[in-house]
Length: 498
Image: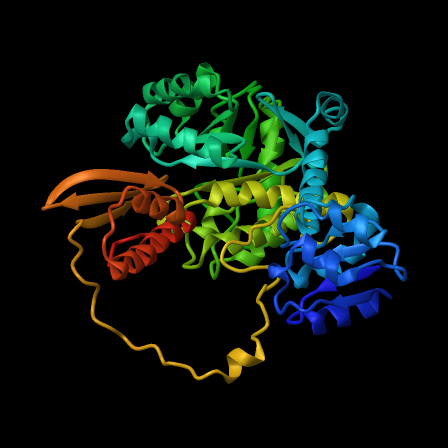
């Protein structure tokens, strides 16, 4: 194999090529992205000491014409030298292209494989077979259990205080985010409202659950056709019998939950035995996850012990008790908690999104659940699966090496300058909501028009096309602010224009 590169990346290309017994052709161009198929063909000429040529993936156009000159197949490699080693390790698993960069093909292949595996387990034939095992069950039409990816149960908190429109908006948001079950959280005794909301959300065609400790609410939810009931403690169990709706049982008696793992598991098993005596048909266990510094480790141990002693029992893992009570970004917290849930054998991940810091938790857990399932199926670590929860950081840092001439050049130190000059074409006010950036243009203090979008580039390009910016310093300022707005939208952060 012959690897073509520019001078700037030559040293790194040589080091990688050596490990794979490949050769490197260094062109006269400093930066590989400046190469064209014609330049490469001219630089290479007839190739006699290689069976295949890899050219930089950044090259525009089709490199098939280079093969006519070299006499051997020529394909696009990776766009970044940092990905070249990964490509060479996976050459047997990828069909290279003369038009598409190899890293894009490799990424698409990995993602496609992951999606195929996830789709297969939920296919009708496989699902029917797996549901014959005692450790799996149906919640509505949703297959749940240890042989399926963990399912995400998203709670709408306080339905008694929300309008129908607010509940619908929240439910649709959770469904788009990847929720498998939508839960209706209600503290007060309001059986009529419970029935109304279940009827309201049935057209969404997603399993519905009720989260309450009020007996009248539970009875109303069962009559209205709820697919899952959260939760029954020792006292509530005595008030119901013959319940066929899947029901979550918790280790609570007399309002108390044992702190020690062994006592918690013992009480949970006693409550489950009582549920079976009362004729409950589909039982789900929830050992209850405690907040950090308030028995978290002991509660995880309770999950582990219960899971080992009751391997055929479906378990629910309530992450909100940790993520909502910890001042840390939810992405990594949810990923780790999903990993713990997977290890102890949980099948349902329960979360609200009750605070700004946990916004996006449903989507995060939906991805994390799939990652843990794929990793477990493959006997691998939860990395390089085709799915990831990387948001602010990257797996590999891609940077062009700093050229020597740039290092040696005389530098002008950047200094803080005055604000941009007043633009005779008007000014802008930028706003961000949950779904969009709004860039409002004002002329003579009056609103002229509003440009909306999700991308700083798209909005900026539109403003330029419409001729709404007249000062270069204003354009630079606007670019900075639009990028801040895009970052806020993407990361679920607040935004106020500076």
